[in-house]
Length: 158
Image (cartoon, rainbow, N blue to C red; front, side, top):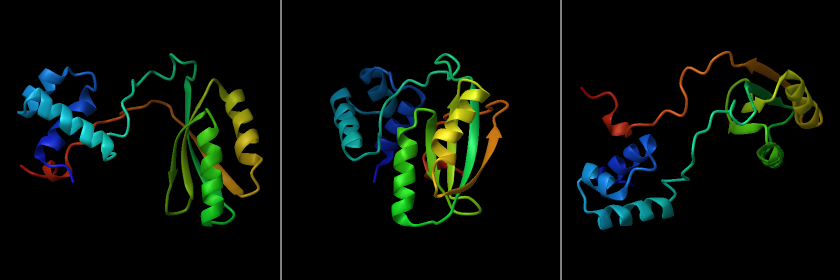
């Protein structure tokens, strides 16, 4: 598990993944080589999954966003894995969550317009015999995006 130095590195990187190593090391209270070694270890251990630029969907030509709640006919491991793999290949699907409750999957879907979303539903959801139903929630406005997570140990104190 990450220690306090690692958690400080992770918290800082969530805010700015392009921070220069000397500045990161100074904020964390380590030497630059020690900070670099820790970052490499955090990547190797999977604590840093990847480093990306968060780009506006509108800039990429995907101005319409939906949250889609999918209910399956059966909730079996093989079926779930096949559907998840298919959804991972669909360029419109940016996130897939396998969940408990009234629905089996929650999707975050981007579209060029409603006609392209309709085409997506026919190509991916209606065409799958294991999909019983789905409910589409059109996002009117995104109020919070990709928020950084503080270390859980710091939440609720003070």
